[in-house]
Image (cartoon, rainbow, N blue to C red; front, side, top):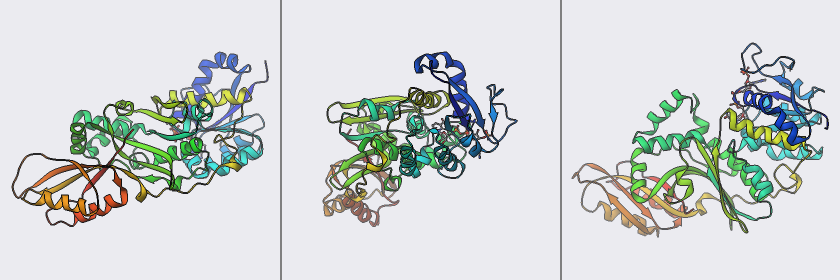
Amino acid sequence: MKDVLRIGVAGLGTVGGGVLKLIATNGDLLAQRCGRPIRVTAVSARDRGRDRGVDLGGLTWHADAASLARDPSVDVVVEVIGGSDGIAKSLVETAIGSGKHVVTANKALLAHHGTALARAAEAKGLAIAYEAAVAGGIPIIKALREGLAANRINRVFGILNGTCNYILTTMRQTGREFADVLAEAQKLGYAEADPTFDVDGVDTAHKLAILTSVAFGCEVNFAGVHVEGIRHVSATDIAFAEELGYRIKLLGIARPTEHGVEQRVHACMVPIGTPIAHVEGVFNAVVTEGDFVGQSVAEGRGAGAGPTASAVVSDLIDIARGRVTPTFGVPAGQLGRPAVAPMARHRGAYYVRLTVVDRPGVIADVAAALRDEQVSMEAMIQRGRAPEEAVPVVLTTHETDEAAMRRALDRIARLGTVREPPHMIRIETL
Ligand SMILES: NC(=O)c1ccc[n+]([C@@H]2O[C@H](COP(=O)([O-])OP(=O)(O)OC[C@H]3O[C@@H](n4cnc5c(N)ncnc54)[C@H](OP(=O)(O)O)[C@@H]3O)[C@@H](O)[C@H]2O)c1
């Protein structure tokens, strides 16, 4: 059996604690599969006195995480602190500078600095492995980089944030509004005290930027992601979606188009008959489309100590076996820099919800605004009658340009009988 692979774990929270527990529990199995033992030798966190639920006896404690990255008794640094900059970034840079492989769960770091870090690591023949950073326990990075590597990928999309999926699922199941369900999710520990990154789509965008790089062989371009969240989705939208044969999901979607690579994160209406419509609660799913393999769907838990530790340790196993692959599937210096497809050029179908005064001629005015921008309406629903009162009206369109849709919505917003700004959700053909 070869030498022990010595691990330094920086961060002992949900993920770091899970990694320690997994290695302690499955140590024999890991040694058998790798042909050598994997052993944690050093750790770092802020509070030395906190009970981590795992035995830290015999491990070197580093009050300064950067010193763990220089520790000669460490071969691989596991960065599970978090944050796109600050200590996480300097720790990873120090580890690479010290000739150590890095495993991280930090999607924010890779979304912002992935290409530069990959260049630095690959120049030294080192790995930066990050299976846990995208869709938690679902091994989608390995699937794209290895299992599907023979294919040209035409599209990748998925539910990449369990908090949003939990909120949307609960809204549908209970008929309650977003704010109410978010507050409950925070109480249950499914949502952070500051939910911004999750519900405003930023976390999904971080993961999508990484997936895009691996799927299409291009530099990580987080700034090129169009990002919207789910705060505007109402119980009314969810009920209408159901009636029209859709579910509402927050998706990250990336694909090459004639205008460049499109990366977008927003609420989508997905047909009830598609697999992704049935991914519920905190579960994640990623759908890939390859030119030879066709569509494949991977579903599983996107967060939590167990699933995330499973992904982190799978990366450690690769390193223990001596497998170091280019970070994003193509050597970092050869990653492409394609144009960003502007959202205005996006083509798709739309759902629009209006609050209008119930009065003769209103619907004709809305239809005229759509016609004037060459947007073709597919269906319209008005529920109930309340003369001279505000009532919801929803409509769906055939495929059209986003720019034309936006111009039509501006016209509709200016109609005297429209009470609130029109509210739009994109319909996805999956
Ligand atoms: N939680 C998940 O399910 C999940 C899933 C996928 C990816 N991730 C990613 O994994 C990373 C960690 O997430 P987490 O949920 O485990 O976070 P967490 O529970 O908040 O843990 C963070 C850990 O980092 C330590 N830390 C903070 N600042 C430090 C510093 N300056 N020096 C040394 N240690 C420091 C904290 O120490 P103390 O404990 O002493 O405060 C804590 O142990 C993040 O990048 C996150 O996005 C998490």
